[in-house]
Length: 226
Figure 1 (cartoon, rainbow, N blue to C red):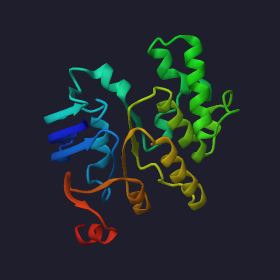
Figure 2: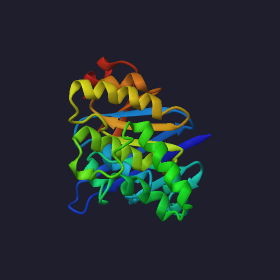
Figure 3: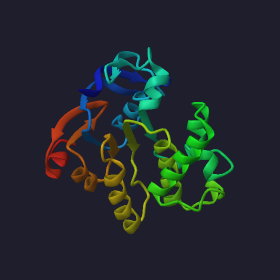
């Protein structure tokens, strides 16, 4: 089954900048996909369409066969998007409240919310951080807390926008190992510049000037087509 299907996707920002120029992409259920490309190629804009944060001016987006905008609430439950900047995702007074925010707004029973928060923090290695202020965490800890907010929603599709950006090399290695763990059993879509992430994914696509220009199998193919 197709977890994600994009057809002829177009999007331009209010200042006229064309971000997506006819993107077609199919991602099978359980598959992992890496979108690589230079700044301004349209990667982040594409990801923001997957859970309805942005709406295309032209084209169609389907998640598990559902039109995103006809089934927006259901899609938001199925697609968990981790933003590039964790400060865009963390806004509550404590880590516990940040991670609980999504389930609480789904009106999930209190004990289940607590179970989800505990499980999500365990997965990201932040047990004991429940009462800490999210904004006083290190950058790497914020990244993990942001992922926990998404895991607590138990999504079927996990979407990461440049997850290793600005991480120190030793933290990045741990983060890559972590992504392997949380990705098991889920459909994964990742964007970035980090070519090490290619080995985590089944498929890699090169984006350039708002388009997917090539499916790549080797790092050398990326530089030849930039």
